[in-house]
Every structure is written in structure tokens, then in C-alpha cells.
Image (cartoon, rainbow, N blue to C red; front, top):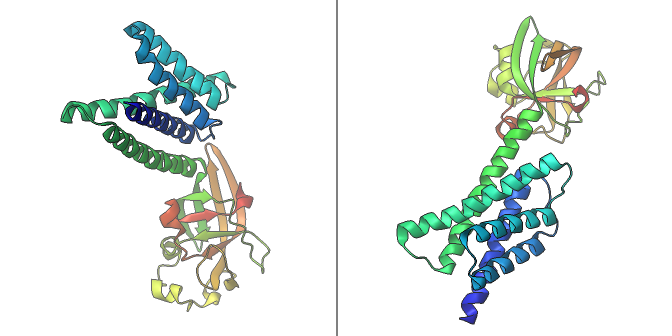
Length: 269
């Protein structure tokens, strides 16, 4: 019996910890004293059944307990954000509890280890979903509509503003916007992929074309850099114009990671 109580306490603490961590990842803020908060929640959950309290009293205790755990782990200011955090915390509490309840409805009464397994599975899924959603949020936050004007052609595409892009053209001394071959091929449809990839393009066929040695986000030892007539970057209703911008052809695969085919230099912020 003592072993079951200890096991129940440990599982309660772990599930509480999962809930706090999920809430923390969801609001993108580190939770303080997360383990202590989880322990307090686990101890109270273990003690409550001893007093055989009524349903209403139990609900009130659970609400106050979850509020106390949130106050311990997250900032109360601004208060509006704290209320959102509390709502998210409550939501994850119901999610974990509902998952265990659903499994027990399907398979009957389940063991404590099974409860732990279900909670762990739910936690892993939640972390993966939150991570994906946070990535989409960051992409949206730093994504802008971009119009490239070069060689009499206009290409409109979503671009990603990368603070890590610090490449400068040593010839023009201007920041370099990286583009994929898909974008480049629209500007220069007569140049095939292998010719571009093997760096056999004649730089003189492009405006101010030249190769720049590089060792960062672009693959290989050098990238083809040329000058576009103009670049327009849209941020809502606002439009920024830049003349004679350096474009660099990259085969690094940043488009697969970011879902964007244009990587803006941080100077274009």
C-alpha cells in the first residue's frame, strides 16, 4: 500500500510537471520553480481524498490549487497575460486528465504505470505540436512579401528576415539577399540547375556578376552574386524600396528549413 501511495505521488508530480512545461512552451516563457509547483500539486492531490470532500468543494480546491501553481511558476504581470496563461494551464490539465479518462473508458480500469504511459505520450505529442506552432508563429512574424526587379522581370515571393544573415558583398559593400535556384531560374530561365550548381555561369551575363567566397549559410566555397535593379519589401501597408541590391544564389537548402525562398539580410529590417 505504501509503494502504491509513493508511486501515485510520483506520477502526480510528473504529470503536474508535464502540464507546467507544456504551458511554459505554449506561452514561450520559462517557468520558475516548476518542480516545486509540481510537488505541491501532487501532495495536495494525494491528501484531498483522505478528507472525503464534496464535489463542489473539490472543484473549488482544484481551481485554487491550479491558481497557486500558476502564481508560483509564472509572472502575474501583466495580469491579462497571466489570465491567458492560467487558461492554458487549465486546458492542459483537462487534456491530460481527459486522455487518461478516455483510455480507462476504452480499456477499463488502468494501472498507475499505464496512466504514466498515457501522460508521457500526451506530453510528447503536445511538445511536438507546440514546437511546430511556435515555428510557424516565428516564420509569420519575420516573413514579408518581397518583389525583386532584375533584368526587366518582376518576381514576387515571401521572404524571411534572418538576423543571422550578415553577408556583405565585398565588391559593392552592400548586404546580400540570398535566393534559391527556383527564384534565380525565374530571373534567368536560360541557365539550368547543373550549370548554376557547378558554378559555370559566366558572371558577365549578369549585372555586376561575380563570385564571393563564403563559409556560412551558403553551401560550397563561393556563391554567385549579382545586382538587382530594385527590391520592394512590404510590411502590412508600408512598402520599403531599395535600389541596386546584391542578390546571392544559395544552394544551402534554407528554403526547406524556413519554407521561404528568399533570405533577407538583417539590414533590411
